[in-house]
Amino acid sequence: MKQSRREFLKTSMIGAAGAFVFPSIIPSRVLGADAPSKKINILQIGCGRIGRSMDMPGILKQDAARMIAVCDLDSIRVADAKKYVEETYAKKNIEIAVKTYGDYREALQNPDIDAIAVSTPDHWHSQPVVEAVLAGKDIYVQKPLSMTITEGRVVSDIVRAKSRIFQIGSQQRSGAQFRLACELVRSGRIGKLHTVKIGLPTDPSGGKTDEIPVPPNLNYDMWLGQTPVAPYNEDRVHSQNKDPKKRYGDRPGWLRIESYCLGMITGWGSHHVDIAHWGMDTELTGPIFIEGKAEFPTTGLWNVHGPYHIEAKYANGVTMIIDHKLTNGIRFEGSDGWIFVTRGAEKVTASDPVPKGKAAKSLQASKEDIIRTPLGATDIHLHESPKGDHHLDWITSIQTRKPAATSPEQAHRSCSACSLGWIAMKLGRKLAWNPEKEEFVNDDAANALRSRTQRKPYGVDNIKKA
Image 1 (cartoon, rainbow, N blue to C red):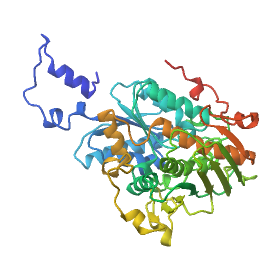
Image 2 (image 1 turned 180 degrees about the vertical axis):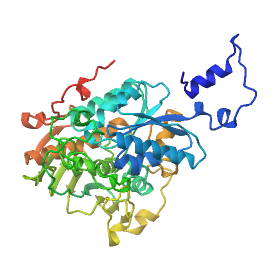
Image 3 (image 1 turned 180 degrees about the horizontal axis):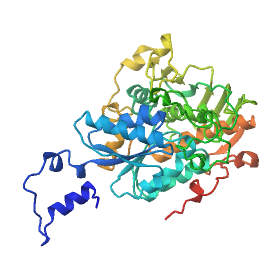
Image 4 (image 1 turned 90 degrees about the horizontal axis):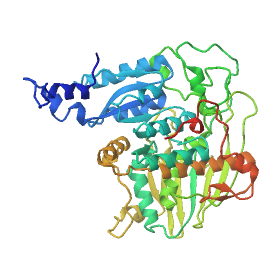
């Protein structure tokens, strides 16, 4: 019979009479700081590009956590992930046998798993989160939180109702320059804020449309999930390159197909709008008016938006402008100056755009004193992640049961603002939005785009909630 480490500890310490007894020799790793019972056991769901480049490395370096299981619908990726995790731990002299799964729902039944990290395609973000919450697990999920506004509302409500620890992959929240920029803006360093300008990249059109056989290592029906059935093509899903170094490098095709991702408006937009909301002090609301226009491809497989322009008006009088021509980052403009913040030369993945020249500086202002003058005791001081580490922030939150850098409601509101932009681009006209009711004012066509049909048995609408 196979025993978990926790079961082994329990049975080895309790004698036949029920009294505690101890083995004659106990390794320090069993009872010391590295005791399995003192670690947060994590399941990694999704072992592709973002998982391998961002979330898995970020979690594996955390001393308080152990990645004990990996899951992916592609069996090759699961095998690669198991090898990667075990070899990473071996370099630290940590011996661990990583369990593998092809279906995360089976893994959620494992009582040894304390928390999950979700690094799947966008259309597979919400459902694992809801099911993990119902299974009593804590959550880390990549952005964007959801594919639709109504789906995001379900996620935020259930995470809060079940009091689970939550973190979303908006790692800019843990970046010192982003936090400082928002603190300076909210402390009045640039006077009264009136405009926020956001620059995002665009995606190329194209993509092969020929149907090819589904590879035997991929559970394609489940990969499609809540989305309509569609012919398989490698440009629709992810690379099947036999070279492991190339298998996880390029941006996969699903990022450019609206069934699985809304494009850069949510891909990068979820990052930058989140910071804009942080600086605007509008994290728990949304715009009251929004309008947009965009070019959408008419040929090829990839159909997410191309060049675009969006303007959103908030109740506090601030206008947020999102445009592909603007420098990648967030520029706060006030009555007494401006602050521009970006990642600078930092790259999370190989395909991330890197500003050049003056724009590569991560924090700039109209006057140097705006940045150089230290914040005082009466100024605004926002959440500071330990060591500026987003994954450590999550692990610390699990340990302390205190909120992480981003709450589920904040994640939903930044994502929904991006979704509103997408709806405005689709309809090409000005829309009035009620952020309290989360509905468009007297606009049936716009309201119909807040949700979409979910193919059974997948999607949050088809989960039996306790």
